[in-house]
Image (cartoon, rainbow, N blue to C red; front, side, top):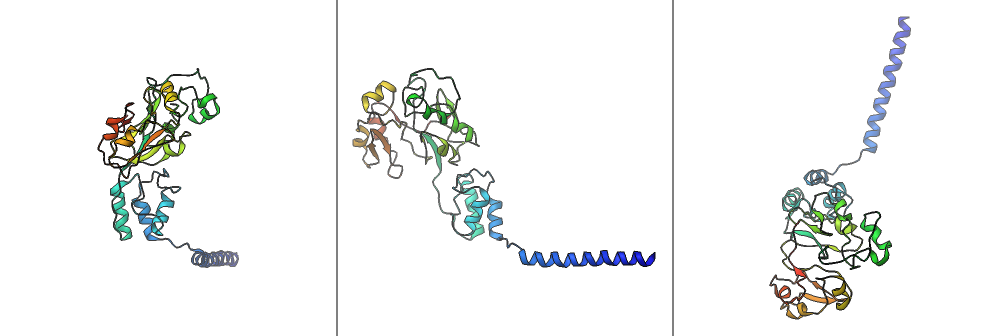
Length: 267
């Protein structure tokens, strides 16, 4: 009986030893090398996984930075503080990045526009392209006000106020989710410190705009002619400010008869 127990113990012990040796060899053979810089960069990133950097999430961003495929200041959520930490890990200069915020190119709220018809259905902006005239509002180019952008913002930085989306620029981190999900492409990222932007996207001619909205751009080009820096141009009947050329002089806003060139509104 003792002999049997000893034999069993020897078999179990031998099997354990063989398994240990096999696992040790397998670990060495199939071991995945970990980039220490990648881990350090990932630890510095905020972990929101918002995709605002252009990558699938913070893990993908960290890998790209570690490989030199993305800039150390590429995280819009982390800002300058995170950029400095990552730059220290990578042995680089953080550089300067202009703070950006989301901006809604529409001022057509319930006071400025009217309703063509009553809509009773799914309150989702993505549904509007399937409706007559692109939705019930009198301006087919404007914000529908059903808040798809609100639903995708993880930072509580955008809300529908009086029928139109408005960004709280103090909360906005420029992650770009609202930009990506607006079906009418009414939202863009602009410099935080820019004081004058065109809150309209209508491509209709002046007479049609005046019938649809009390404040929409009529493409008169007075702003374009008044800008000393050549920063304002009118294309497809709507004015646009070149954020790289604009020096915040305010000449365009003063010349605009519709008062549609305004500072970024806060929620």
